[in-house]
Image (cartoon, rainbow, N blue to C red; front, side, top):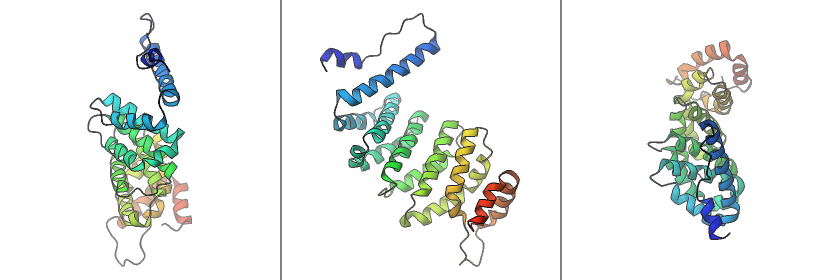
Length: 248
């Protein structure tokens, strides 16, 4: 690729000023995706692209951080072996993005990319990142932003599938504390969030099971009657699922 081509890729394409604002926006988004694809495949080898994205993921500009997280998601999908090689670096960047102090877009993109990455690595060797991801995902389950809630439920449900022996006790406590959120968002105003919540509820249901060796009821266990009442009224099929699997 010659210098002229590189310069063109690095600049926004001119848009005629007579076009409606909505159309101009959609065209910018379209050409941005083309530019990213061309850059990823032709301009730089994957290793160079990764380090460019790693640098931009820490940029003071929120838009650049957002695009970097999206780029890491594209790499995780298209070149998973390269991302696995730098897994710890990627996880560190994504966890920082998950806790971004100013940009909901960065947080949202970080969750989406984490979901892709966890699927590729099957949740293996997360180390203490598992705690950081779980805590923030649980917090975002009740966020006002529909996109954040949806992605948080998807991510939290995925974590339930990848809990190892080391973090089982921790995750069980988190699910117990999340029970009210799970019940509330089964009736979420956004149908996609409600569906994601239902899927996550099923994934987390084994962690709601009472421990038989206890001769007393903990505060979390005492909420089971409430769980049964709400499920029997709104989602009897979920209640049947819990009984069939001897969770309740």
